[in-house]
Length: 350
Image (cartoon, rainbow, N blue to C red):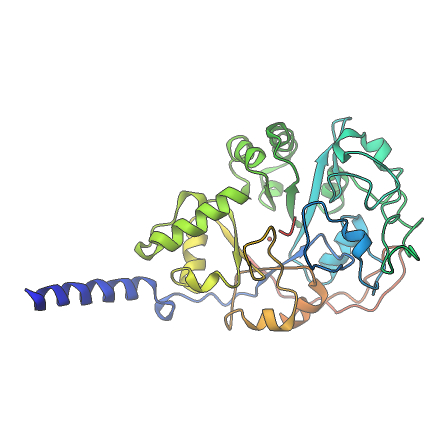
């Protein structure tokens, strides 16, 4: 009886191993998909961040002139080697979507109040570089230089008609999901295939119902996806929350995923999902990006999934990208940049 039990356990263990070992998984010789969070942005002190932290007031000494979520910043992200650029949106009172990160205007601009309580015509007049300071308010290097740079989602879509975008819905308002679904459903199927959306649980639930062909993820669904997969992914079954989704994987969670990396990537691909590796998650509000050589080195050799980064120029170089030498800065001046070549491919910190 004992021998029989041991044999059953051994057979079960062998079956689980064969079904999940990465050694037997098909490896796709593909370059990683690089996602530039907010395009090319000013970096800031990330210590002890909260949802309402004014990151513009914690800016590190600037090394470039780009301001996040602007047309030049997005273009620079693509020029630096990004396959996908993430942008943030808010509905406006005149029926558009403003591309802007903050819930309120007070941190980055000279404006005041909740972003979504303004018209796009008003928001275009603001100076989005007004609040940036790296020396506790002694100087404001971008003040006066960001006037008119806040774009609408329509402008971004028109400017980058063939590029992949990840749209962050900043609220938990169901009606925002309805409005965004209406905008995206007005695009061609080919264009919608290049767009992903993530954000609050309520608007994303509406997005999945009204625009089911667009890959989405929310905070609740990514937890459900990863925890359920860790629980029973050894069977080869993929949780529903992981289907047609943007699957965000913190680098310190990845080793717990059955078949990481290739078998896991293959299973997600079969479920019509895309995977992006993030920086470590430590149980707080946010996870970082793959922003340093040390974090990049933690990715498996030959990794062909997605990489989410706040440092697209540095990570693109590590990933072997070559970038156009014609990159220009926020104000149209030529800058030094990596050169883009022919690598092609098949996504918060909120």
